[in-house]
Length: 378
Image (cartoon, rainbow, N blue to C red; front, side, top):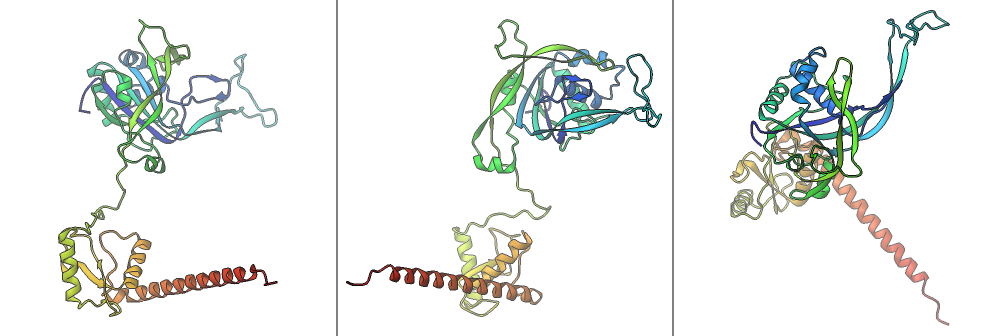
């Protein structure tokens, strides 16, 4: 993707979303994917266009072809909202409704449906100058943007990028899938996934599929909520799987040690020889070498390493895992860390003795069982 093109990508991801295209009285439902009116309204917010001026600005945005890819469908549930408190709700005859028991203005209660923990990739395709204007607005929005309703705040930046593509289907297949970390881990890097997509049907030369959906969500203006219809096709796209970068604290990223390299074997040997093959912590025979820092991986010096026996090395490593240490590690030669290392060694020995005791008891129990099963000689 580049800085301009015929397609703009929006990432609509958040704790709550709501994209209603049909509502009845106090029941406000949401579709399972973003509506075109909601997406264009989001763009107008970023541009700083008021409702009164929306019809003029929508002339350039309405022709954009829209496609939605469902990366995480989310879960739907209901909540309620009140309206008209201290203002008044008018009845059919134009009078303000009043609560009989209190004489105060009546409050309207509506049930509203939301999508929770959903993530969508939206592609809008059209003239380059219109795409560039949308991109500029999302880079520096005038007003806050939201996901269908003002209470639905995006959890990450909306603008994902722009590019040139033959059609919406190709565009939606170009961006890596954004699944949950556990889902991505099941596939692994280099794989592809098939995702549900909802693509606007604009080819009038061919009849639309039988299962095409007619949606009244193309806004003429946002002042009176007047909409035109469009055809939406339920389809699938294939997207690449890309493992997300591991999130670590700034300055704490580590590199892997190549334990098979000649450099590591030489550095390890030099450290063991300098310690006379003795553990720096307990003075037992040392067969392992421990990193006290990963700042110089691939160019380790003696100061970066310590010779240890197996149990002392296990204790240091377990302490590091418990603290989620990365570059700076446990130093077994540091006096201030000696108490923690000793406590960890004691815990390891106790657990190993307990494990050995269980193993002996189980072996003894099985032996007794086998002997009892032997029939006496007759």
